[in-house]
Figure (tube, rainbow, N blue to C red):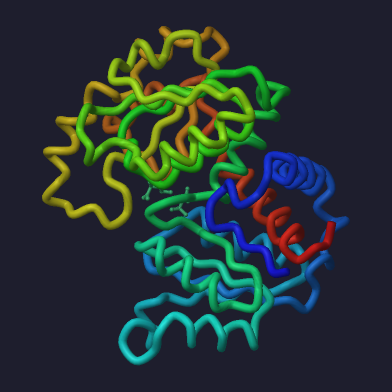
Length: 310
Ligand code: CP
Ligand code: NVA
């Protein structure tokens, strides 16, 4: 059966651990894998901008002995002269893996439904699984464990990265506070909360939404934030969003309220003086570039896993 990665909980906890461990091994010994996907092709469909995802997938595929194609959806007949099912079926005849970054979750669900090869979500409005698997590798490297810690998220919680962080914390039995404004536009969707509650039942996780940033910071090991202006949010909303999210900006006082060895994370791209101050992201507790680097290693492990190479 063809497996896909559309959200992080498409993998079980054990599978996430397996992929993270493989990524750590690949990072230590990349040469060992330089022909692991020899002759294979990855198609990368992009509907939104990207720095990290595009470069790390393309580089990763090349380092595994394969080839990656960057394809901008605006250059394709998709949506105008062709539907998603035809695109998925045709691409499956040419390539071995399809990855896509789209605006609407239904589009990637349809790609996966009609594709005969694995589909990887490179970010939609519901999930960013490659990011969060890489982030957990980074946490494992920095903290030496993937259990018994608290992760606190600050800012826009109606957000792809937040959703996969919530799912991952729920699967791993962790404590997570999501600190966001009391406004449904900036809060997690009920669909995600329901999934997280279900996952938490067996793991004992405690994932909750709070509105006091200092309460979220208390006793936390990981402080995480993401853009207030995610890709595709209209520019005219910027001032209104800045006002709503400012009480959740990650500042030095927030860092001081956390555990002394707390790490600061942001999936990037980041805007200084928006979701965090410059002194936080450029300060000693920031691990944002380790996070970015791990995208390369984890995506190699994800592709190998989906191609049943380990
Ligand atoms: N974090 C992340 O996915 O970055 P890009 O948007 O640059 O790919
Ligand atoms: N939430 C952000 C993540 C960027 C990697 C966005 O969707 O733009």
